[in-house]
Length: 168
Ligand code: FEO
Image (cartoon, rainbow, N blue to C red):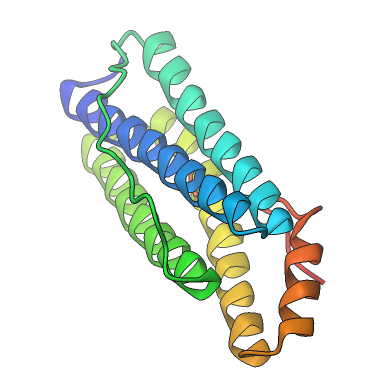
């Protein structure tokens, strides 16, 4: 059975994952309208993954005797400056998500809720993958600079990449 504290912390995490999904959906949609089709595919998939992260939490909360809250969400940004702006936002957002996950893990230890602590380890590993990928993509973009050919290849390579995968 979940304590109220942990239930509240997990419901906060449900909201974060839902917000991430909306944020990446907004980025995907923007990228699609800019002709960045590989980037758009990657971000649409990333948005789906975040929804899956949210669903996993909703089911866990309900299975453990709590009540999952489906949150209201704020309007994400409609436009972005360029592709660098997209990945800078994504990296910053994921580091914030990591900090929130760490807070939930910390609350589990304080409450001696080892079941939820164990459940949250999946999210801890996932964050390592996602942050590494976002950092690698930002580094690649910095190398490419204004080279149009490089950007074309970067976008094409993103076509088949998922958020928790490492790029070659
Ligand atoms: Fe659900 Fe991107 O972490």
